[in-house]
Length: 159
Image (cartoon, rainbow, N blue to C red):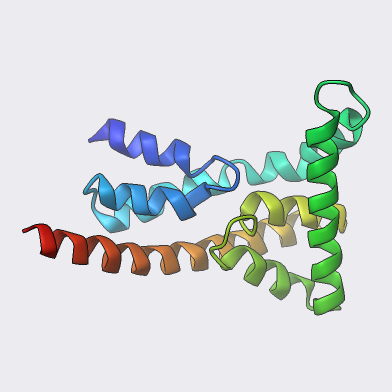
């Protein structure tokens, strides 16, 4: 059981997959939903302070390097575009926009991209972490509801 929880913990830390993939995996592994939700939230939030503090600096440093330049430029452009999109649509409500951006469980709208966008916008660290946490909680609830429906229906058919 511990290995399964560790598995979903690490899945929830992977960029683009995050808890959006980890919660359905937890249900496929037949883990209880509430402990899985908590583990996935913790795993998804663990990288956020590091992303905020170091990702932008690393990407700026690496954008002109031979091997990693392409991927660094890709993430800088994606983060900048997401940041500009948030600012243009939200104006002064960037906190709410960031929370909703992270809370919509679609690929590319998770904690990693949201935190990078917030660092590009020079949002305060505390505001960024709190908005991303609220967004992750929302996305987790949506994925939890969807996973219970999808896997609950599949289990009923198989049984």
